[in-house]
Length: 495
Image (cartoon, rainbow, N blue to C red):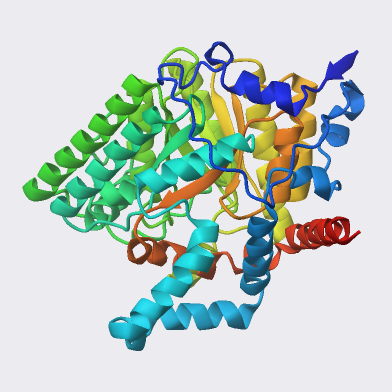
């Protein structure tokens, strides 16, 4: 039996057809702004072969060798900048220098700060971020959509520590949903929320301590706890909470009620807009509380086969697969369709240092291969789940092998092309070859696109740079293909 691969030019039209996209169906259709073509823009490359044997579909259709086709929608100007930025971030001392400059008091005010911010805005910020406000992020989304990709809108706020800050952040997230509704249908795949931005950090830490103690002692009563799904597994680390915590104070319970109201308002707005809300993961100090908020909201808002609230599983954690199995089993029993994003994780050094401070082994897998295996196992498990029942999955990976394995599995199961149940995702400005390759093969692909003023988003970028040194250094595959395509274009222009 043959499997047809939809040509990109047809696939792009289908992406605008709301009959094939139950998600976002309620979004108004607004024609994207058409920018004047650059002198450097390239015309689309020829479509892929129409017929591919089923046994070879996953690997044959995912072509990551043809640089001309992969970067057909990328202008030479942007390709040059991307290549330069990726080469710079792959150099450890360069990253160290940039982080020192952004943290140093010398560069916190005056002319030096202005110079650093201006240079950052035109290079790293422009490469890794969607813009300084929602309007510029919308333009970035439209450009991405023209290239056949989608965007995850990320309002790049920092952690909040008091209710006024949480309220301001909520307004930013609500505005992000409004912006998503004004963009071309299905061009925005998710709005991203950080629970740490709408609930005070101290409260999240207290809630996580209480939830961990209840895991240790099931008779420990939490009067504020709503219906949820399993947060811990037998192998989950509980060393963060060394002694029985005190109950929440009346003031903390009041703050919790406010946090519940904020998340409820955001979920309701997303539900009305038919826009999925994806909850980002954090470090294990506060992740139990984040999972609690996520799962209690999923029970309330996820209906039929259309998850609105998505959680995140970090597969570099040793207990990730066990927790995923427990959560999906409980959700099935309750009849709740679940949405999950799978990532590897971004807090490796933080987690290892914290565990060591308590005298425990790191909760992170002992080897990178163990992390790869866990991601691939969880990916295969969720693909089988959504192929045979309700739910959706986002596979957020920059790993070429994981992308190939998942694509092959999706083809085998009949999950993939023009299918709202599966989304691949990569960070904006990273793994462009994998993103375009998966899109050319007929899969939905999104880019994680933070936006906000440069000085607001810079802490986010610094944390990502510090925690993702390996990812930045491993961008060699993209850099090699970019050099190849730039060389080909130069040769074509000269001869």
